[in-house]
Image 1 (cartoon, one colour):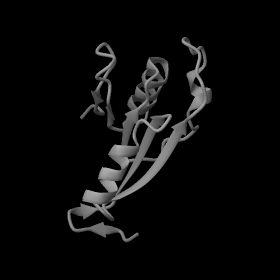
Image 2: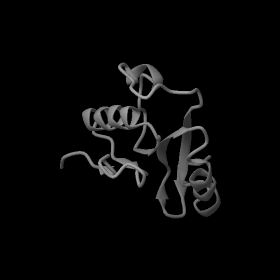
Image 3: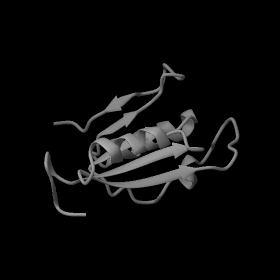
Image 4: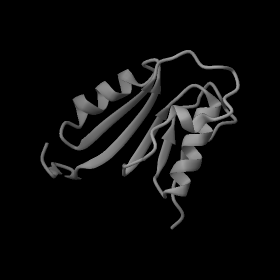
Length: 110
C-alpha cells in the first residue's frame, strides 16, 4: 500500500469488533476508499461475561493508530477502549446505538 491515496495521506485505523460486528463497515471502507486506510482489525470472538473486571486483557497492549473505530458490543470493553484512546490522544468513533449511555465519539483535546 502506498503512502498516499487520492484523498491525501494513508491513515492507520484500528477497528475493534465483537463476533464480526464490524465486517460490513470494514468491507465498505475497503470498497469505497481503497488504499486510503491501513486497517488493523482486532476481533473479540470468545463468549464474554456480563461484567468484565479486567477489560484490558481483552484488548491489545498498544494502540498504534490515527483513528480507532469501535464495534464492540460489551460496554466494559468500549469504556476501556475509550479511556485508552483518550489517554493516548487518539480519536475514537463507536457504534453504540444499542447502548445509548455509551460514548459514541471522542476526540483528543485541542
